[in-house]
Length: 252
Length: 114
Image (cartoon, rainbow over all chains, first blue to last red; front, side, top):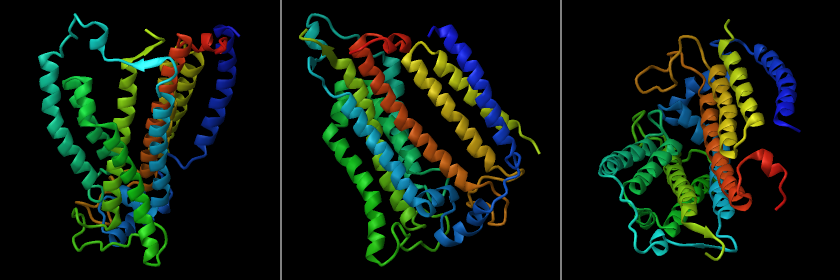
């Protein structure tokens, strides 16, 4: 099929699909007319039940916690999948650029990039940590915080050499952190079973002050584990993708 | 009642699909898939919106303040995480396809056998 024919086919099929999608969407109760009841019930009772001012986190890590376990393991599986797909294949070997052209130096990173990247590293760590530890109070959580924490490590890569970056986040340590993060979430759920409660029941004391960091019981704990897992998973994925630039094919 | 955000959803979906079908580059195709998925964010957040309501964070508002649905917002978060995972996997598959076949054009990849 030529690209032209394919486009014509798509325009016919796509028009039909869009017509059906629009038809379906017009059956919804209008923008701004959310009918409830689930959101309203949670908005009404989440603060009293979980002592978390961040209702979205309360949904994610408490009411819908079992779903989030699955979500976290999707990311875990994706990092493992990337590592598997990008493994060193037969006929490939890693080399450092210095081995290939011993007489030439790699162009140095520009001073402006180095400076900017180093300036951002510290604030990014603080911000990532803040987001991870404030899931229960503000619009934040382990997923967001983990990504920001991973960005801090990528800044180290931008500021210097790839090898320094690899030394900063050795794959073995990152693997372990990822496993602890993913396993910790599941373990918090299993711990509830020990008290005779359902899986992932919020069994910890929820604190007296609404919206303080120490409030909301397992929500804060789970967010912490998720932050570890997400940061490690993203660092692993980025390291795997960057590793590809060091690969050469064939015997050369 | 207004349906404008839902029309935007259908539009983003159609544009993304058009990009996937006509794309001549795997990385471009992955980005088009992200566009398709973005339509679900607009849909989720649009479905849960309540006119005149605020974000469901009771840090500085009382429990009786009207707020939008937190359930769909949590779902949008799940959506983002899944998208990141899918994108990472697809990118690594694209790298391997390029290594093996020396091209990222889906049209050429389809006619090749490794």
